[in-house]
Image (cartoon, rainbow, N blue to C red):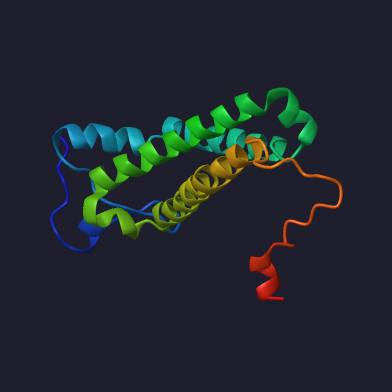
Length: 157
């Protein structure tokens, strides 16, 4: 049976050869989840997702690729973002108040937060604007029609 460290400076964090400060192992089910989060396989998988996400973001800048596989790229981007959010939520549950002691956790939190805000902004602003663009014009425009020629606009000229 493994002995958990007592309170003190060693219990606050183990230094893992670099600046990472990982909290000591928890008890019970949380301990199993923590071991998964800190395993090299999990870390390698997350790095792989970061690389795939970077590739999809790069491909999304090409009009040709977006025309051919835009829906797929957007779906992959959303799935990967969901996995990143799930990882962050899991870390917040496992590490609780010690989450902020690892600088990489803070970096991940900021990056994923920005990605969520951008995703929300695009879905809340551009999608309705695109729908408005698809609506037919309320009044057919005639040759020489000036939309700003009405009496209302002439008052403010």
